[in-house]
View (cartoon, rainbow, N blue to C red):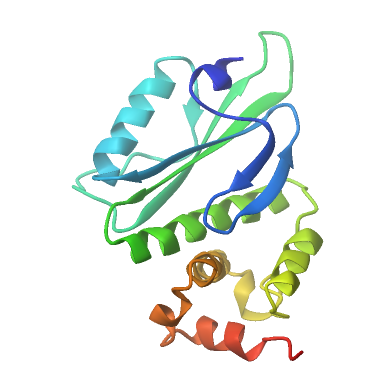
Length: 187
């Protein structure tokens, strides 16, 4: 219940930007704070909000930095009841306001970090994600080859988000963009 009191959702969610539907079972939560003006200040506010209510955040606050360049995904967890051994965990994301095109890319990038995290937690998301990509006309498998590095995988999410908004060409100087375009399925 504590997660819901802080705006987290469970059950059926759609990860923004990549528009990827995911079912989160009990004890897994997601919150999207969208675009914010200052990531450092927002992260500080989120930490105060959640830690004051007994949550433990998985990352250290950025010390001595006025702002983080583009986006942030953080994870909060708490015990589900005093005697229960299971842990409730939530993912929270937000991106720095830049331009609408850059914001869209960063939202998809951060959503892909969440996909990666859920896969590491044992969720079978690779096949549905590949089916979504195929439905978009791409055969690229971002879960293999060079994309198994977390930031490269997240970059694929940013490109997908931009592509869905008709803005994919903005990143055409990217090697991953070239791979994505080369994987277009011929009809």
